[in-house]
Image (cartoon, rainbow, N blue to C red; front, side, top):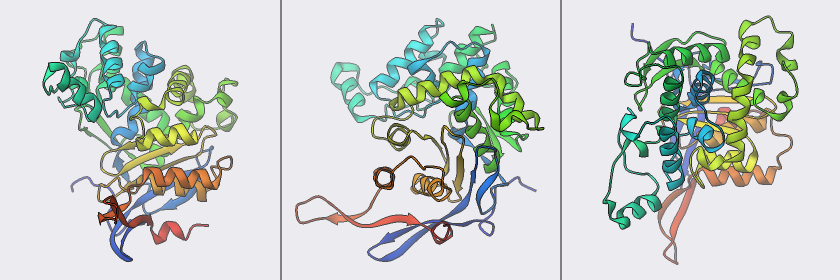
Length: 367
């Protein structure tokens, strides 16, 4: 039998697309919200069924690289967990990461790409560089640079750093299992070429919730988080051995949210304006977590990310996980990260808005 994520029969309606008063599309999927102890507050669909975590896994990959000796902090730490759009600052920082261990973009094994940021791409063209492609410009280049820094730190081969048996990837597998509290159901190849793990949405939410809480100012005042102190689960205790890395990572992310995705981009906007960690992944996966330890993970079954931010923030709101954020600010951020439904132009020649993406009935009925 072919391994699989959850089926459409197991999914629920997470969001719908309204165009001119007509429900044009429906996004179905699964989701879960956990409280700081890891207990489910909201469960929709089949959140216990594995999904490929894609780029939502990056905080765990970054922590593993740092634990092996990748010397990153500030912008470099944020880039190690980023899916950047390659603004000039992103490219400069990743190049600096590589140069710090006497490596270059040629040592990266992620695909080559043009910069996704139009301003930076035009600046390269206008400088006479033409329209170059490079693995440096790929959105996962910061993560790959951190892998290479870790490999160099332990004296491991840099030419095979993406092999699942490589010491860097073996450490990542250990960190993933420790924070998620479960053994990955499968290991595949991500779009960037790195190993990617299949976890339940519960495991993903638990893992990233632990990372953000462990890296928060509140948790930094204690050797063991009070939420985990009396736990009999080994992973609830063992992940505290990575506290130093989690604190460096979260300090960097919240200080420089532009590095995670890019100025004005959805993940960056949520981190910057709400103080909530957000990390989307390909194929409709997203995870968010508050510094107090609440977390949400979801997957749209059709692989679309159009509604993931809207649904994730709505679920955190319905779970009571955002008490210090005003309703007006939350609404502003949701609007900012959710593309409107457009059609034609208005009387002044501007793109006309004819509809919107809204939460589906299975989310809307949660009170």
